[in-house]
Length: 196
Image (cartoon, rainbow, N blue to C red):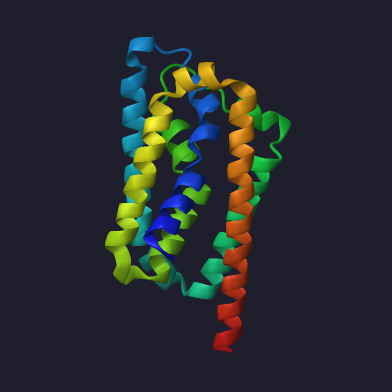
């Protein structure tokens, strides 16, 4: 995996365009002047969670005795399930979670930004080639920055683009993720067969 492909993968699983409606809905009860501070805080919390998984996830896998091919296949399956939900969202998924008062950590930081697919992806990337950690850190920071810029403009983008365009973008990103997920499963199975 190259730095570019890792960045694209992480950007897709962070799903900034798909999260715009959720951020807008979660912030409706908050004062408009506090929106940018809340978004910045939640994005920093999400980054912290992602960094923890990036640097400590590999050690957890070693303790559990999970092999790299197994992790690759598992990561591909998780990504596939997330991608399918992006392409074919359930009716209740569109509404998001109900948030009372000002959101803190849940649901904006976790699971909207640092969700299962993002956590599995950073864990997978690092565990496969841990010696390239500066590249993976750079990929995460670039993807997180792009996500942060989009989500910080969530209110404006929701008004300008409209619901249909946002849904179309999310489904396109989901289709790309499906292809990446299938490739991950095929790679994991291939490596497992090579080890036998």
